[in-house]
Length: 352
Image (cartoon, rainbow, N blue to C red):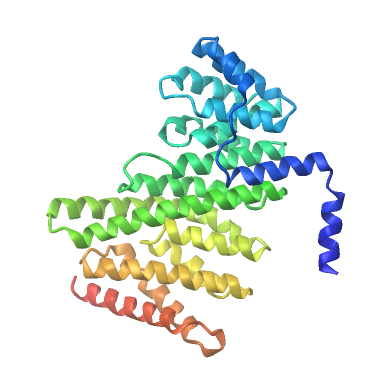
């Protein structure tokens, strides 16, 4: 019965719409399409400014593949050609009355990514509410790529703070009515989570690998900034824990863990996740907790636990009781990790 329903559903999807959706999904995995020869020839005969103007105007093309080619052409412009003027034109295009122009501009930003496109983020956030699903999907992918591919200092708190700020919007987008938009949001969140986890782990590793007092102070300050700033956006992200779909609740818990791995603010949400009605959500909550407590143990060994870390002891003890309840069937390594962390934090508190 389930198989029959699945096939019947796709049979009812108009072929033209289905092609659009497949193209959007595949674009997340495959390299940019080869730029069409017609565009390249016409572009070579014009100035940079005219070239960009012509390409942006061409976004109203009815052919989606041609539109993707145009976006790739602009996205591959050199740094010299991709000037402030070009950025301004593309930002204006994000608010164009034609949805094809809006989505085309968002696709360019999704391919360009990094610091060069950061000024477009506020407008792209507005595009998440666009009436057209393709615009929303393109804007979602662009936000993920811009923030995740930031070429700034990956050893800085600002990377995690940016990820936290925009994770809020992406988690909300997981509840979009269109599956293509939800898929793009999940993909973007994975990128941001990976970036955040890497940065936090790097900072904690620095505490253990240097005896330079100034370096340790700087690293500790960065972790403090993360703790303070992330705590402000966690409640907004945690709203997705009310979602009826277990996969959304699970991804929300992973997002909270990756951007708040050093703060007690994340613990109440993880306690809630451990008691979720769905086993997959409870399992993700447990794995996220293990990641957090592992980092806390590293900080305890480096004598760099913060007040926020110590304040997590009470919630960790609640977590310990939940994990140790035989009827919950959690793994021994999860129980042991939490117990070791509680002991380490209690010892650190006594030494203060």
